[in-house]
Length: 224
View 1 (cartoon, one colour):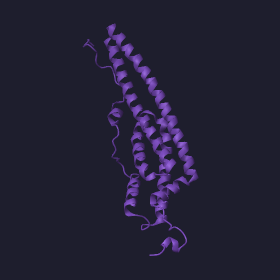
View 2 (view 1 turned 60 degrees about the vertical axis):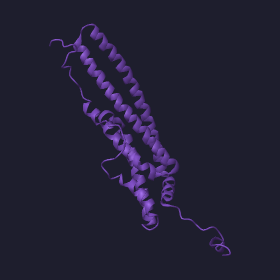
View 3 (view 1 turned 45 degrees about the vertical axis):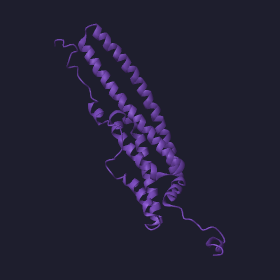
């Protein structure tokens, strides 16, 4: 056949952008969301530095407590050694929780940066939401002053969901491929799910055990 459809109409055929591309363009083209994401990423990065600084202080505290406990044992003060051992256990548990929290904040900053850079909300929304949910109980228990940062992350996610829904409404149910829509909708459904299936460190036990302990035993079986 002589010529082509494009030749007949004087140019290349127009290819409609996919749903993912429409969402990317909508996110990247929304100025207030971009500014909000930049501010949230900076908050997360600032909090990571604060968390790491706190972890370093706990490292020094553990070292000091360990030295004191050894001295108490050498002096035969088993009750003090036991009390100090409890403090060391609590410090180690706090370090574990704070280290996990620092990792979560780094992950959230990274996911937001990827969405900001390429607008790929479908790929990063689900893992970001899961990490936010995993971080929330730790923040509430040991670092409530960081709750504001999590609220900012949640606010950004809500904006992303709203923009994505707007794109869905504008395209209509027949305006995109079923497989693509299914993948994006699967990510959005995470916004209303209570449980998130993700390989994250189990910190529930640590949160439960993180409470003051009394020196009820004596090392070495000394008398009361």
